[in-house]
Image (cartoon, rainbow, N blue to C red; front, top):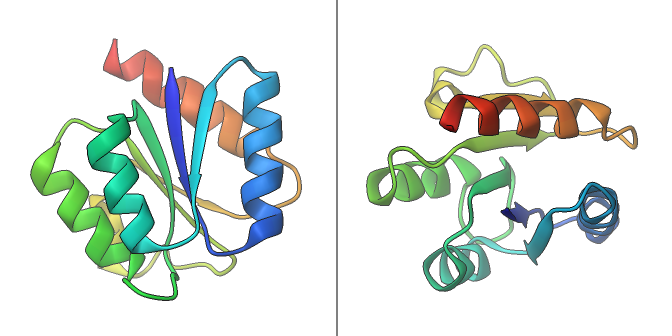
Length: 117
């Protein structure tokens, strides 16, 4: 299973990548919306972890673009802040607040992939 991690924070990308690789996932990373779109097209990921705040393209806009092209693709929105009341994140399949503890991310991925099967 291939997971695309999109985050402009190098430490988060590294943490998520290493922890998910330990779980047996193939992980690809992007630090910008432009790179994320390229990898999305080229790599055809099974699931995406997408930061709301990116330097070049809004994570919300990227979510819309990805869902238009692949409506069934599970996308987890991640952020350092609580955006749950922002209706624009509701198009995502799940929403988590970033943490150095990746347990919630791993559990969310497992849950979304079970629903997909």
